[in-house]
Length: 428
Image 1: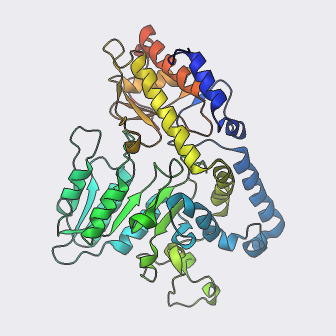
Image 2: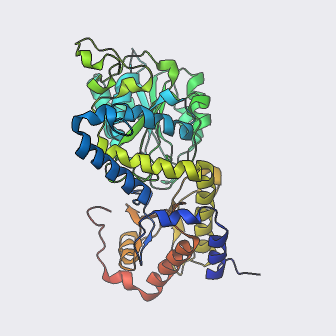
Image 3: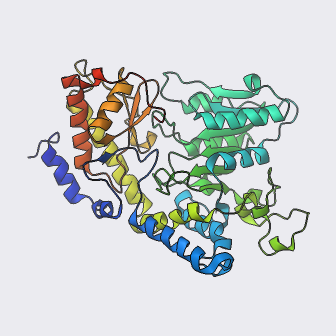
């Protein structure tokens, strides 16, 4: 019998891991344990090759790359959207790769937020990522509203989690739109998207989801659930690089609806170069594009999807849940959540309620995060006290998880964190 808290058990898990071979396709730096892929994923060799190919097309084809590159740049957003669509339970024409997550969110709020009379409120949560709140505040203000009144931020009962019952209770006759995160960025709580969407549909309220922390970590069923729209970035779990291109989803029942922010690249592809001043939206989600597809920040997604289509999103989800569960078992079983070490776990234990990272809480979170980094473990910190650790399925091993927990233990035992600055770094 192998002690499940032993390193030997971690080694055994790695030997049995069907995704273990994918680690070699990523640039994992020697002597480093990278636990920050929920913030910025690592570069893969597949992605590097795709970017080099795009550069070669640019070098040899120039402007002819729009139609003669492989794949043709002119249709790249549509082609990649079709490849992403299965991961989101969508038809190929319901997903488009374009813009960045906040730009796409502005676009879709501008499209779906149509306040009339007393029906002018937007539902968000008190634990949303700030950028989403900024966008919603701006659109409430543009329509003559008061964000303090018309932006309903559903409160958390414990500062970590949001209860679905509380969101549904906020769906009154005054609500014009709902925009929610699929995953709370601090705690890693996965909201019940199906249940919440169904409740919104029953009340006739359009609902959109920010899937920044679930895209590439799990599958979705947007069309089956009746989601109206969704946005996400691709540089976290989907590993497309800093500032990589984003994507959006629009349910086909809204095809033909005028985009809130019409733009050049959202024009009907067959007539785009007629240069007419009357906007004619492209059929499908492509109509919600604004600007020209940025080829060099979009090419990485080709390499990423090469890997994901081979690995399978369901296997990625299975390993992610197993690795996050293992991390929590080691923290609790090793006594780190007791008073001697003072760590806490802010992430739900129920697999159906968590995404791909574990929120490790500690009163000395900023200094412990610095100490981890000094030891070669790359964590993520979110104020006031959350060290986010993401055992990414494709390139973090179970031994990495075991070693990280030993570092957390030793940092407290040695007191080495006490010599470090109490504040977070500029980029936490």
